[in-house]
Image 1 (cartoon, rainbow over the protein chains, first blue to last red):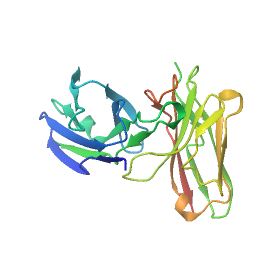
Image 2: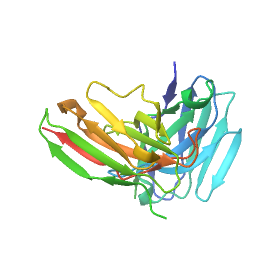
Image 3: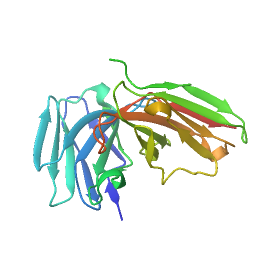
Length: 114
Length: 114
């Protein structure tokens, strides 16, 4: 079956670094997305990985290992406004065209404390 | 550039009543998605349109839910009759091309069924 695992909740301190992990088991693989969702708001796109390695965007970085079915989102210099849910989503590619699926994780709720 | 527009933002109805949600995607975006999201969960796809064609409606409860995307632009999602378990946030998203690329979400409609 198709499955994505993320920790349910994490807590970190302002100014620190936090790593949010995502492991996946899907039928084929053609990209992994990270989205941020603040309480009561819609998800917003953070990053996309399709090749192995680290993608850096300012304070946020995302890593992918396709052989391990593993990704992480790294948040540096945490700020209070980073308190949100972080969603991992994997695009499968076993099937072509309209049979492709985007599999969503349940999200990791991050609380940043002063 | 305007983002994805949804209306209404909030809706409270009694069970067995009908309800409809409207979505206007980002101009030029071919793909439109309707999701359901419960508190503390990831988005669950209800239906995906490529232009005016519904290419994935496998998770749409067709006995009570219906959707349309006339002329491949705006879309409407309807529930008739609504049940208590339908209380959730209904998110609309759009993406530029086909193939499940980066999605841009609207603010969502929070539905409460009493």
